[in-house]
Length: 294
Image (cartoon, rainbow, N blue to C red; front, side, top):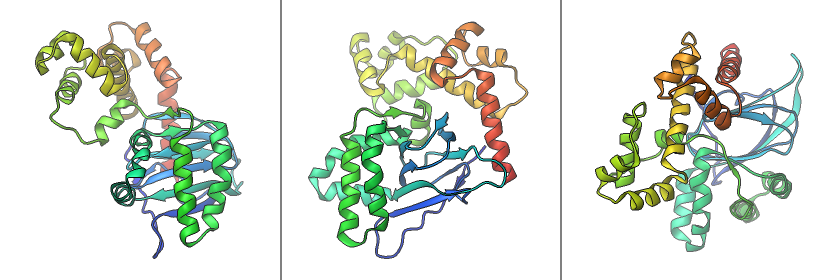
């Protein structure tokens, strides 16, 4: 299911959008936009979708997403029920933040936050509690006060305890820019031969490194080992098949993506996605049905 493009409106004389909305609302659908977004839930509980991540949300949930990362929050309300305020939102263009970082060396401290947000970041409750009053003041502020609050919020997020990364590695690869570096060539080869048993020695030889040097470089680049990375990519491919082909059986998907037995596949899927393959298919099918009914 392709997400809809959301057109973010930034008022004349302002660098970014800061606003609030209730539920239901026009942007509550499977959508994406080229701007970064900081999203704080103030009311209701429900299910949220960030890339290929699905989870539950409640009041206080604070998430930051990078450019073009599909997302949706669906509140559990009775038919006809509505709430006047569900979310506080800040959206800012990539050009604006990149130009600011380039012009002011101090802004380089934001770089790790910006890069990690491309897969979606879920922050802890204490950070959310600090950010909420700042976002409320920012929405009402004007001029330099508005700008000062914006940078303060980003500073708070950059210095927050390690947030949870939401979308999978494959979303990063699909949306990110690739280069001709050795590691990226190895990653490309791994993806092209995902269902085969490509080992670390093969990849190291391909990029002209010793196996130990390649192993260190691979973990530094991806944050994990080759075995775990490959398992995650296989589960990501399984998710794509579950969503695009409702008739294919889970057992067929298991072998098609490269797992040797069903129990091993189910174990890795549950560990990475927090639910079984069948539950994953059912949950996203419900999201699609709601989007189609709008």
